[in-house]
Image (tube, rainbow, N blue to C red):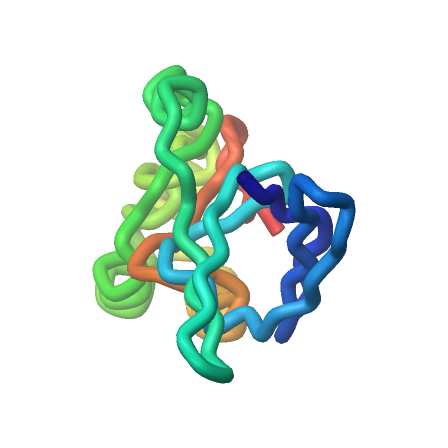
Length: 142
């Protein structure tokens, strides 16, 4: 079994059991939210590589224990755009205090909402798959 050693914007380095390190394009990952240390299987089909995550009990329980909060990208962006002045997206991230502050200030008089919306668009390419992942305190994981 192999393991993700390094993640960059466009490539991933995978360490194999035999000690070899293979650099692959990020698009060869066939799962969302990769992290360094993920156990993976690498398949080669001609010149194309396919990398799939090895599902283990520890990886599933890590998400269930609340180490990260997954939120659908489309839902997050739409809610930020249309209901950002109410701080709905901040409540989704688990940032209750900031959500209340956004309600009181009308999304920082619209400026704060606009900044959050732009950040969510910029972060689209940093998260392969359908979800953004946030830490326990509501920050983007990358």
